[in-house]
Structures are given as C-alpha cells and as structure tokens.
Image 1 (cartoon, rainbow, N blue to C red):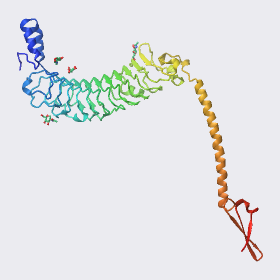
Image 2 (image 1 turned 45 degrees about the horizontal axis):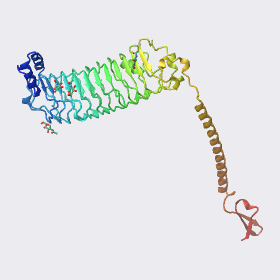
Image 3 (image 1 turned 120 degrees about the vertical axis):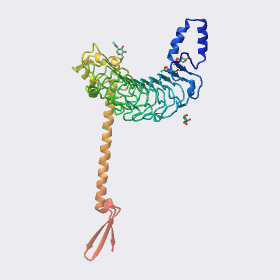
Image 4 (image 1 turned 135 degrees about the horizontal axis):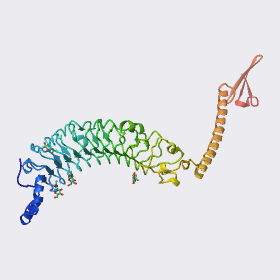
Length: 417
Ligand SMILES: *[C@@H]1O[C@H](CO)[C@@H](O)[C@H](O)[C@H]1NC(C)=O
Ligand SMILES: *[C@@H]1O[C@H](CO)[C@@H](O)[C@H](O)[C@H]1NC(C)=O
Ligand SMILES: *[C@@H]1O[C@H](CO)[C@@H](O)[C@H](O)[C@H]1NC(C)=O
Ligand SMILES: *[C@@H]1O[C@H](CO)[C@@H](O)[C@H](O)[C@H]1NC(C)=O
C-alpha cells in the first residue's frame, strides 16, 4: 500500500505543513520525510503501545522512545511488514509477550535500550521472525543473565550488532550467543568474572568484542573467534593472563588487544602472543607491571618481531625509576632485582626474630622433654609419685618403708607391720 499523504502522530507536523503553505521550498524536505513513513511518538507520556489504527501498515519507522510503556505487546499489528526501525528506548518495559516481535519480518533495527527487561524474560523463539534484524540494542537493562540459545542464528540470521552493555550480566549460559553473522558484540560494563567460551558459538564474523569494565580476574580462555580484530578487556581486575597458545589457535586474526587498567604485575614468555605479527596493538597501560629481573626474558626473546610497525605498550609501574616507561624500551641491564635498604633492614630484622624464636623454641622443648622423662619414670615407680613404699623382709619382721619421691633414702620412715 502506498500512502500519498504524510501522516505523523506529532502535532508539529501541522506546523511543518503550515510552513509548506507559505514556503514551497520546504516541500522537498516534507516529501523526503514522508518517504520515511515514520510514526513518531517520542516523549509523549504514553503508558501503552498505541493501538493498531494509529500506526498505518506501511510504516517503516516507529519511534516510541522516552515514554512510560511497561508492557510491550504488538498484538493486533499483524501487518507491520514494512517496519524497519523500532525504537522503544527509554521506557519501563518489564513485560514482553512471547510473540512481542511476531511478523516484524522487515525489521532491521530494534532499540530496546534503557528499559527494565530481565534476562529471564528473554526466551528462545522470542526473536523468531526477525530474519532481517541487523542491530539489536539492549543496553542498560537489568538482565543479570543471558539464557541458553537466546540469541541464535536460527532466529536472528542477519544480526550484525548486539549491545548488551550496562546490563549487570554475570552469567552467560551455554550457547547464549550463537550468531555467525555478528560483527560487533558489546558486553562491556557488566559483572562477568570469566570468559566463558561455551557461551559463544560460531562467531565466525565477529570483529569487535568489547568486554571492558567487567570483573575478570584470570584471563586464560579465548573463545573461537576466527575473524576477530579487536578484543577489549580494559578495566577488569585481571591479575593473571595466559592466552598465548589459545590466541594462536583460535583467534589469530586479532589486531588490537586492550588490557589497560588491570592488575597485571608480570607475565611470562608463554602468556601473551607478542610474537603474533598480525597483532598491531597490545596495550597494557595502567597495570601493576613490575619491571624487574623477572621480566628480563622479554629483552632476550628473539621471537618478538619488530616493534617499528607495531604499538606494544607495556607500561612499567615498579620500580619507581622505571615508572611509566615502556618495558620494551628499557634496556635489559636495567631490569634488575636489587635489594633496597628497607628490604635489607627487613631481612636483618626477620633473621634476628627468627634466631630468637629458635632459641626460645629449643629452651621450651628441652624443658618439656625433661618433664616428660620425669613423668615416664614416675609411671615406672622411680620417682615423681607422692609416695613410694618399699617392703623389706628382715628375718621374721616385715617392714614397710614409705617415702615421698626422691627423698626415699633421706626421709624414709619406718613402720612395723
Ligand atoms: C522523533 O521526533 C524527535 C523530535 O521530536 C526527533 O528527535 C527524533 O529523531 C524523531 N524520531 C524519528 C525516528 O524520526
Ligand atoms: C501485557 O499485555 C498483554 C496483551 O495485552 C496482556 O495479555 C498481559 O496480561 C499484559 N501484562 C501485564 C503484566 O499487564
Ligand atoms: C532511539 O531513541 C533514543 C532516544 O530518543 C535515541 O537516543 C536513539 O538514538 C534512538 N535509537 C535509534 C536506533 O535510532
Ligand atoms: C599506541 O597505542 C596507544 C594506546 O594503547 C595510543 O595511546 C598511542 O597513541 C599509540 N601510539 C602510536 C604511535 O600509534
């Protein structure tokens, strides 16, 4: 259906129409706008999706952003087959009927950002008709979790950009993102504590993976990303990194690896793919890199290709004399493990304390051993008991000699029995 007239929910169109009456030049803008076929309801305080009759069938763009809609349901809109852009950003959507996006077969851009959508609401089959969808924005929703198979290639076979940043996500279930056409995935500003490679499947086209601002502590897993160019892991809590072999095996097209603002102190020859020529930028600025003798291997590592054409920044944090220098530009003989005066003092003090403790320990042990031996002898009747008794038979008389402990000989008292 081709509608010859321009319609719009916004009152300001009347104003534009009035302008056109006095100024024919604005007719051009007016017509080009009309070819957009936009239903613009932005910021109108709506609490519900407008009913079907206010949105014509050939609408290409619906802008419902900045309203107060909480229940997203397009029931009764079975003919939005031309809809290309659907913007419901900045509402309060917490309810999504399972067929909320049914029949939107031409939709290319869906903006659901800044709502109240929980991850558990997003089911498999939710996006089943969105076969042309290229951009899905779910930024700033309290998702917490992405369930298994929620974004999968059977339902979203054209998706290129997925934004699930600022969503408090801490769980990515198995195969939650299984999109071979995806080129850009934004998982930044979430609460992920690890890279779960089971979560990502068949990301054959992914070029940019943004996982910055999460809570990853140990980076030892690389998903299979055969087309990756940029992996951003800035501002996590990474202390340990062991990804060299896996990058070579699963992501060797990578060009930019960002690890800025983490907590890495040192790494070994088998931890980072410094020898991968395609890798143009590796950035480890704002870490806790300790440029001491334990990093000396880097100066001797013959496998690291020329740095001239590549930008590898490994900023020293310790020692202070090397602070803010790039480790790769520090001559090997400056990477030393000197013992500082305070450390020397600490060692001396520790030795003294150690020696004193040893002496005390020896003294206590000796005392204890002696006491133990005494008790043992007492148990045999030797000594240590309150009394000992000695029977003697002297001809016809039986005598009992009693004594306390050691004083047997000196203090014996005799009784006639
Ligand atoms: C809707 O109108 C607002 C201004 O009222 C404008 O900023 C916004 O871009 C329009 N949306 C579309 C999709 O044209
Ligand atoms: C949302 O709208 C659908 C369809 O109108 C309705 O069946 C459902 O009960 C609504 N949910 C809430 C929580 O209002
Ligand atoms: C949707 O609307 C919001 C707010 O009006 C705007 O910032 C955003 O860019 C729009 N999204 C798209 C995809 O046009
Ligand atoms: C190297 O990369 C850093 C970011 O990590 C950037 O700030 C700097 O400008 C780059 N230098 C060159 C020469 O490209």
